[in-house]
Image (tube, rainbow, N blue to C red; front, side):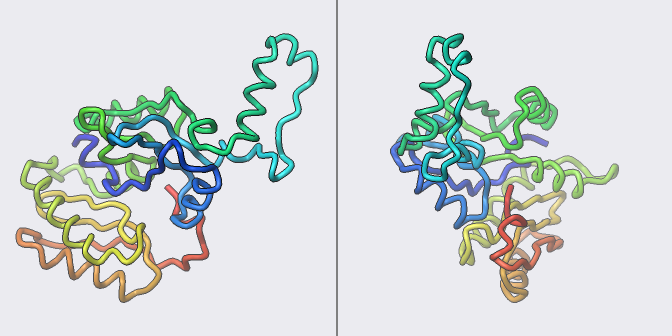
Length: 233
């Protein structure tokens, strides 16, 4: 199993020149807590999360440090705090030093990165370009899909996953309608959230129609769209 087998391929991103309000709106509309920041070439240049937007002058929550701490830092910390709370562009607020993993990274590498960096999600790249994202939830889903006698993902499984992804994408009436697809020995597991039972069944039917699929395990949950917390990564 590699990072490409674990990741969610459909990543909602934002550009560095977008506004902070755009970032907040995108997170709310898609029920997610963080966004990779991608430039025009597809390269990951940062990541912005809910935590980056907590200390804002618009909310009256900007940080007020003690005067002596400002002196000790040579004025650096107050300046950084001001930018974080007043800047309008994503580029000024995002975390610029982003840790990524290659699409061929092993699960052990992914977990080690998450633990050492203390992060909940890590972008997956191929030749520097963003191709997916892995969250803790992706790892749990992979664990749930694998039993001791389950064979490792083969090249045929990866090809089948691509074809199933393309099939369900045609029914993607919601950007998070399928959060992840796991394929093992021809058996497809669907994960994600939809707002109705008929949408859930339609995604299953679409996957079942793909040649080579032996069975479909539909783990997609029907959730009220207002319950945004259930849709987060």
